[in-house]
Image (tube, rainbow over all chains, first blue to last red; front, side, top):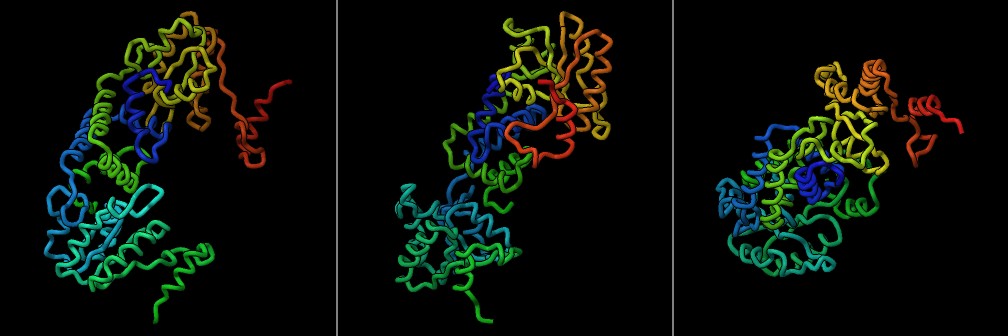
Amino acid sequence: MLSTSPSLDALISEFARLPGIGRKTAQRLALHVLKRPREEAVQMAAALLDVKDNVRTCSLCCNITEDDPCTICSSTRRDHGVICVVEESNDVFAIERTNEFRGLYHVLGGRLSPLEGMGPDDLHVRELLDRSSEGVEEIILAMNPNVEGEATTLYLSRLLKPMGLRITRIARGIPMGSDLEFTDAATITRAFEGRIAL
Amino acid sequence: MLSTSPSLDALISEFARLPGIGRKTAQRLALHVLKRPREEAVQMAAALLDVKDNVRTCSLCCNITEDDPCTICSSTRRDHGVICVVEESNDVFAIERTNEFRGLYHVLGGRLSPLEGMGPDDLHVRELLDRSSEGVEEIILAMNPNVEGEATTLYLSRLLKPMGLRITRIARGIPMGSDLEFTDAATITRAFEGRIAL
């Protein structure tokens, strides 16, 4: 950088380490911090440390939490007979935002990906098998619709089928609000495969 | 938010306060911090506080600095006879990146904008006039090419003209690498007005 302050350069470098934040955005963010009151920087600094100190993994669902088990796993108002398996914690947030799903979750912590060196032992598969015996009726697989996600879905369904549970996957098809005209062929194919009788 | 951790929610809120960072991006950044080693969060927290503690304004050019006067103002290898006037500190970085300009800068801290309540007294105009008497030969006005920038350029040129200095402005025209075909009419008009004899 060509700024006139090493402290500012350091903050720009820190911001630029975040995913999706380039040099120029990092510079804009750092200058914003510089302009705002000191207490805002103090709050952000404290929030950064709090996250590292307070957040851990739920021993049941492997989602991030501060209490173990997490608020979802320990809730009595949720359906403990259904487990939705997702790749990452942010998938849980995305599904929770719909306010529709009332079951529990299981966070794998990734997906099968030989290219990234992620095998079954790197995912929380063991924990899922351990949970799947006790009063669980259905396991919904909600991996992302790409090659690795499909492979993970296939792997888990083969592993779970012998346990006599109902194994489902979420539908792949035309997203709401989009046009058939602009939808790719693979998605349309999936939408036809997943058609529902009316 | 619907996360299962108040600390994570707090960090997401802090990131979401930054300009251009929405809720979803903030969530992605916070989860990234969660995944990385604790020391990275410590470093970012320290950088945030360092910036607020160490960075101040150069008493000569009003640019951000840690030493007063700043490294540019106190450099003996730069041309102290030329001052480039810009709106904000990030404009200085943008110009420094070219490695072409060897004069000094003056950061106004904004631009004339009645809508935003920015008048001449809110900018570092007084400081510019104070500097402009001592051995300065040329003042280059490098405001952004929009209505407020043009108004600021006009205001400063009228103020500085009576001091007998050479007052210039940077050229507005077709940016390098672009097509005439896709350039807006206002830019083409400026390019014609600013044509140079070959």
